[in-house]
Image (cartoon, rainbow, N blue to C red; front, side, top):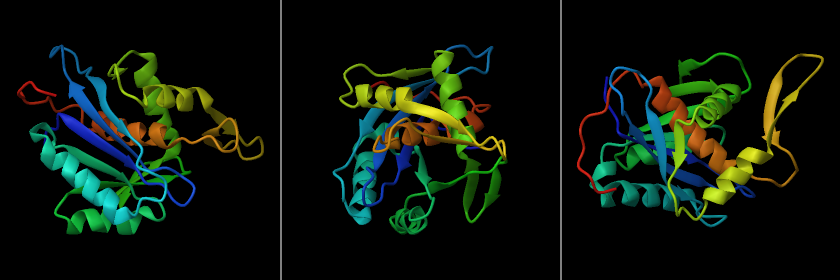
Length: 203
């Protein structure tokens, strides 16, 4: 199993939604316990309407400009319009992990990636925050926006079907940063039985 120290999460926006990009560092402080911490090192929202090829170029430049990110796991939202964008990443020579967000109850593998219930993504994020295992680097401009998105998130239960859905409290509130971080964290937690290799300082 490949060991990653960094995870890049990318939630792809559409016409009225932001695309959100995050970089999370995986840190293992106690090798006697399988409990890593995840430090959010980068949060970014490209301008609304940024073309998808430009998003691919931005991510590629980010990974190439920092040697610590050369081997980062790139986790991309492949839901809906995201599928052809995943193909653009592959054509660019990158190896995206495609995540299709579903309303189901079970994680499945198919179509060159994972199908993951939104419940699993959000629950992973909540557990990490509540346990103190997810940290936000000081000084990140969008950190307050991420916190606001988390506070505005709620669970909506359909009393007839008992199905749950996750959405913002008010119409017009974005959840792109939450989902970008959740994508990276979910995949990192899935692979956390592998211990990170030593890396040079410098991030």
